[in-house]
Length: 165
Image (cartoon, rainbow, N blue to C red; front, top):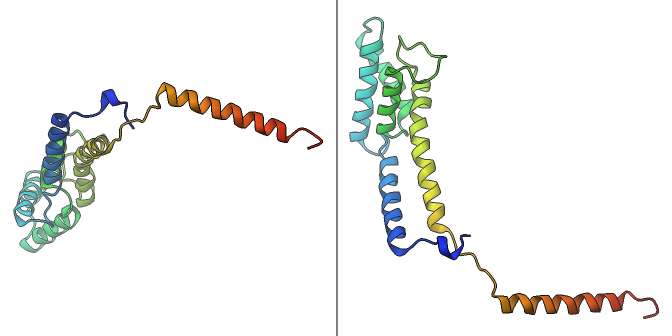
């Protein structure tokens, strides 16, 4: 419920609806929805492994690692995984991590979900704003009528509670 003065104008509503639609499109950019987004995620993972891995692993081990990361990240938007990798390269994921090595699939998933959740949360709040209804403020006349009716009810109840009736 919002006061009438805070209700969205048609122009504001249209702009917010357009923004929410764009954000929803971004949130759907996951590897499970489109191979193009899967390739972007795989590029991020490959760069992390090549840049930070200590020693060269065989082709089979590399493929297995890639599958593990993709299993962990298949429902995470590719841009969020890119941001997660950027945060890892900058050592901005907490002191508990050793940034010499690439994050495990589960850790990269957790790090990548942070920007995704921030964007999803803002979109949800905007959707709630779009769904807000105008607060119904009763008129002064209506309030006066309700006070009079309430006074009548109180009087009736007082009469009914008198002994001898």
